Image 1 (spheres, rainbow, N blue to C red):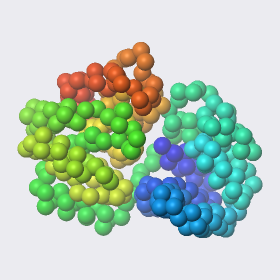
Image 2 (cartoon, rainbow, N blue to C red):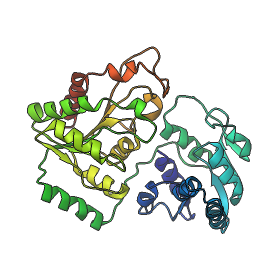
Image 3 (cartoon, one colour):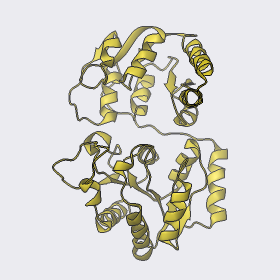
Image 4 (cartoon, rainbow, N blue to C red):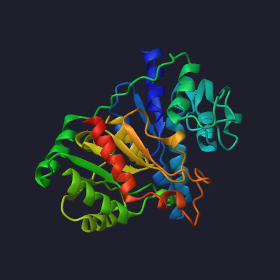
Length: 333
């Protein structure tokens, strides 16, 4: 959800060199985008593994090596879109003139105290894409949110095409992602209801379903496939660029509030998003090509990971989601 803001900065400063510091596998996708010149990876995984193994000297070497890479160049402007103490500290360590971040409205953990320039917020519950655009406009970008068309190489597209061909997947095909990131099970819709939904999609709409999965999720994805029965296909293993190419090929995406949902929105496909405890006003898939399924519960949104009731997500029925799928299908033709 930072991409439109970064693209807006690129459009405002076409000759600038833009380096994006990122952690996690999304860096593989960013590396293919022409509006970014360089992707720098924060070694979070190696640091965590070293600390878990008790290898403090190894972890120290990782930090030292990362800081050396970070400080190799001097930047005219350093922007912190993340707004937490870790990203603010890294911004402070980088060499540069202007250091820009959010003010106390949008910055967390007192991170605004690290910035030389703070961009004022206007609404605590504004969508994250619009929030990030505040920074781009502060730096001189126009008001319009630019369209971002992501790119992946042809060999990645061929990998996905070959999978569809060998698996015998014929359109229409809907992608379903029943999972969420580690530690966020509290916002997952029950997997048994996904199985029932897949059955209805097959019986009433004649669509096949592609079950997406990531690291550590394959066994549960296989269980969902077994419950769903005929017409449910298990996606092949993918990295983030391959997953994006896969999403470009499907007719609709159905899932909860996850990064994959935003990737589907970026792929310009119809999205049916199931929201429970998280705030759809802030985290909805950006754009008009989506339907949000949620219940008006007095305590939602809340983000309470230890909630025992889960009324907000448990009260969403299979019929609620199926009706949204039909509306989205009718809307997009």
